[in-house]
Length: 239
Image (tube, rainbow, N blue to C red):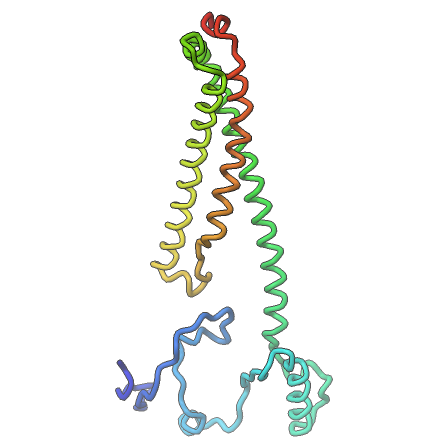
């Protein structure tokens, strides 16, 4: 606890009277808050000899009041400093609300793009699984023929290959979730969440992805499994 301790800043002693609460910060005006020290305005003027402020930060009581508040502040400063309130070059205003609106729109489009890429990846993965199972059926044609000759039903063969497909898909899905969780952990451990944000593996997304993988795996494996179940035992044993 540093409260009550004396620190030296620019050759002058300061007593720590409080510590800002940790917070997530999407923008950094001349640096993030966690790397800042706050001192009284009067002390700052006494130490630097500066009489005037060159910038200040304000926040509207409610977001919907932001546009009107910006206009009123500009008009008040224009009357005091004698400039045209419509002159954007006389005083610069950084409206973070507008920036966040743009950022929200950008993130919505970006998430839609990521969703499309994820869907495309699942489809490509499903095609890959289907091709693998076709190869497996071709390589095990004689084995399938022997099983059917010994009394195995077509439904049994179908369920066997469907189960193998779902296991293969599940292994890939679990591996992906483990890698994603590992990346989230690494970002947090390295402190990168302060600059790029804190990635979180959403349970809802994980469940949705698992269900989607299961459906794609079922569809991808059904047709090779159906072909295997329809093999003629006599012909299959001759392969």
